[in-house]
Image 1 (tube, protein in one colour):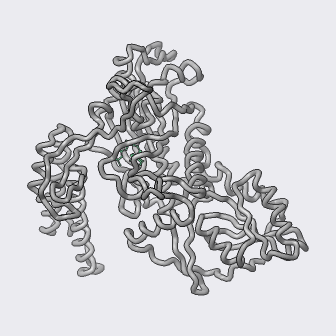
Image 2 (image 1 turned 60 degrees about the vertical axis):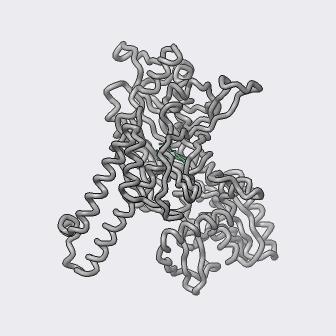
Image 3 (image 1 turned 45 degrees about the horizontal axis):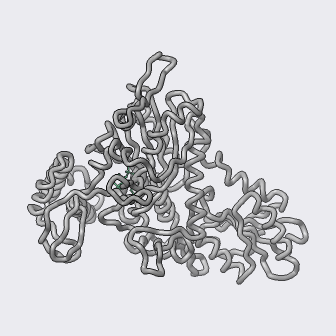
Length: 528
Ligand code: ATP
């Protein structure tokens, strides 16, 4: 008997405008203990955030889901946890000292600082938005007779915008590839790009800005003691290549996976936890026989997308974006982009890194970083496919796809985070219907039993409806309610967060029921 929720039919409030939605998500994240600004009592530190009680649980679950999918379910992938501080020559060998920079430009009037390439990208996005608007207008005008493909090809206005987009993108890519800062500045001047804040076009020249944070090692303060906070976790894997090879029984192709903090002094840090100065990465370097990198690149593209889709969000929220302009180390690269409230943006990068890193570390360290292949009887530097995903971006993706506002049948509203149950901070809430008649005692016993297997919560304060809302707001997928019938027949109700449907289960079966729903296999299926 389902008795507690009167709201059976629900009406989804149409997804609010994205900017408004984004604001709601960020304030919800703070209000319910997911994310706080760092050092908030001192007015915060730009682009640095702390994770609160719910946020820590969700973040750990995201990391666990990735780690198990990569390390536990792949016999040939092992883990590593390298230090954040590394020998400074690592960053010379990796190319970060010389090439890890972004083009910076200042506006002389507003004193605001921008990434020059992003100003041009934003201009391109404006033209693309205009194309979209033209299409929407025409669709409205022509109704059923509207042929979008024909319209895109024939409308002179669209042709003009398309040419601008293509020509500007070509010039931007050329300037970036050639490190030609003057051409980049010329492009900004010619396009008459204005400071988005002040409208001023009074720009400085474009300079390169290295994104690595540096610090000093030990008590010496001369230049030789300068070291860096790692800007990516990958290099910790490369420099440990021999150690892992010697101590684990991996055979090519094999992977080394790592989760850890990375630091980048981003010029413009915005969009909440999307672009942070201190963040966390989940990276895996997969070492393959040279010549097989294309097929492994294709394999990891598919495998990583499968991981994302296993969470059950709408597949239309994801897309691949293959790179035309490649980083200095890559011969192929793609991003898995996610539809954040501010548009499709990179969530994960998959790169075919060739043998660049191991070869370069060989040269700089003088140590051989090779694999002896017993099948081909050759010793070679393996090629590498990298998968790299930001924990914080994944966290933001989960929050934005989960945040839902609903109007219930009785006219009341609820905010519910439809977080995939396997990632939810709290898995089950145990609630006595009333704070009397022996119900709290039974509920406490159930909670004390369940907490050994699941992150559980016990709550007896306020009316049952309000307690459900509290759990909905933090995304608890299941609520177990103890009522008078429990005393008669030993059953409780289990309420599903998303459908609000309820069913009765015997107390002894509760654990198995939840275990089945939350089991990794239920989500990830059989690994390939
Ligand atoms: P972007 O182009 O957005 O700056 P990137 O291409 O420099 O990202 P990578 O170097 O490929 O990023 O890093 C791998 C992953 O690390 C990214 O896909 C992203 O999820 C995450 N990441 C990178 N920079 C940041 C950042 N400043 N804040 C949060 N996550 C980040």
